[in-house]
Image 1 (cartoon, rainbow, N blue to C red):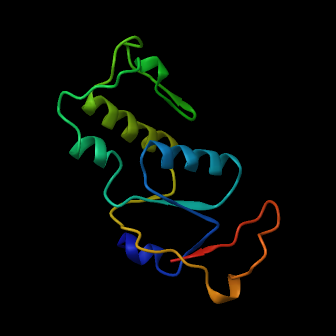
Image 2 (tube, rainbow, N blue to C red):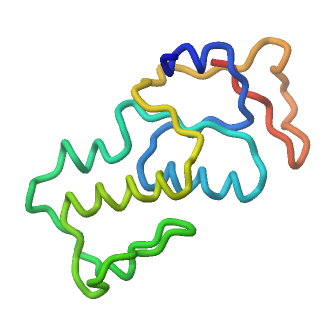
Length: 133
């Protein structure tokens, strides 16, 4: 089933747009708090690193500082600096380990609340209005 079909008419408390480091980190924290959500990525995880960085690109922070939530650096060179392909593998490893509710190859063009969910008052604490695709 295509990602668009899986999302059609779906309801989530939170929609995270973008499956990069920030989006994946937010997903981890939402899961830790038991908040139902989906992460929507226009391409596939690591796309920006894979397609829009030089082959020789490397981080300027040591590997030991690379720590997505619940997933510290696992290589054998903590004082080294990850290059582009290592960063992509790190992100892919995080997804394989954490298994976020990720939908790839879908571009978000808009999100909206259904009329029945619209309100001028903020949601009660601990609740979020669902998102309709």
